[in-house]
Amino acid sequence: MNARRTSLIALAAVGALGLAACSGGTSAGGGGGDGSTAGGGGEGDGVVTVWHYFSDPNQVALMDAYQEKFEADSDATVENVYVPYDQMNAKLVSAAGAGTGPDVVVFNGAEAATLALADVLAPLDDRWADFADADQFPDSVLHSVDDTLYAVQGYVNLLGLWYNQDILDEIGVEPPTTMDELEDAMAAAKDAGYGGITLSGLPQSQGEWQAYPWITDAGFDYEEPDADALAAGFERVRGWVDNGWLTQEAVTWDQTVPFQQFAAGNTAFAQNGNWQLGTAESDADFAYGVAPLPLGDTGQVYLGGEGQGIGAHADDPDLAWEYLTSTYLDVEGQELAPDLVGSIPSRADSAEADVVTGNDLLDPFAQSIADFGASYPDPVIPPAAVADVQLTVGQAWSAVIGGQKSPQDAADEAVAALSGLLG
Image (cartoon, rainbow, N blue to C red; front, side, top):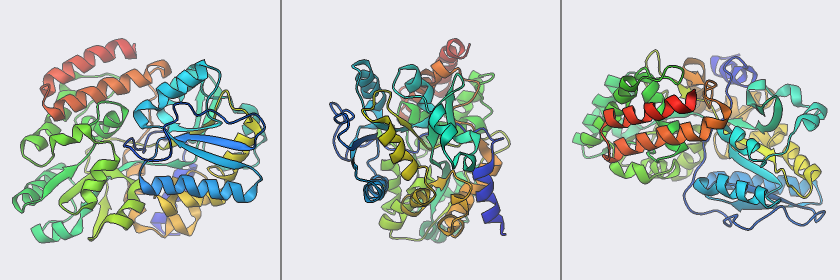
């Protein structure tokens, strides 16, 4: 068995990493409907309503593939409803307050506690205890709050460093393995008339997700948050803006837009995830590759992916569970994610499939899991504070990239807020 195969299988089995979940999702416009009035369908009408926040065509294609698979295997129908990422939680909470909502929720797994505490998700303990394939999933992809299971993660997503091989060949550099090499390469790319890097600077959880590798590389952690370490991480990325390697427009970009910019072919690097494999294949008209983010000893990369759960007010919870076990949690269904999107299956048996082990672009992500993998959200964050912590750091990250605050001021204010949130 080769190293790639071993690494990917180990991902599905590893519990020690303690990955909780994350968002590899998108939030730009598109998709099918806005979810503002959609509920769970009529009771007993054989319709499974699934709320999601995907707008990337390949991620939408995965939702469509799950729909086709389930409808082919049952007498029921599926209604996929797009809800923008930054509206998802508010709409879910509002619907739950009215005693309604979707049958199935596909959400940022890091926000399981937020949704569970708001009565959005139904407990899954009894269903999971009876699920014949439960032993294929590591505990690390089960989302529990106060010892109650509310969601399961069907796949794993994480960030890496995408590179345009044509540009690197033109400027005569290799894919970077250190921060100095990355910055030298971005400088050379700018001198040759190209952009340096794309990433998301949104002032919310996606921003915190993207900031985390760089701020931890500078020595920041949530267990003992230090303003100077946070400022150092912010200062580095602000320097990329000042040097013309990163555009301030990143503050308006979710994780879909910066990869679209990269796929256009005029930027050397993109900090983005394994879920972009499908977009790269369909949109990038140049040679490309992926390397682990060039982090040091303290640098970490969140391990995540969407969580899937049953709505607390689903009209037919049994049918919703049938949908989940036939799609996200099914051995064949899990193979659709790496094929269409590039996400890594969470089942041990699915992680051995050729669609995973035969893809060289997944190697750097598997390497990052071993070298830099971190739980998402950080387990030291109290469940009820996760959303506020992510918002606090995401807003600081965005303010620095956009030039509204200096790195030190943004860090000082963020750490002051975190001290109350983290206890």
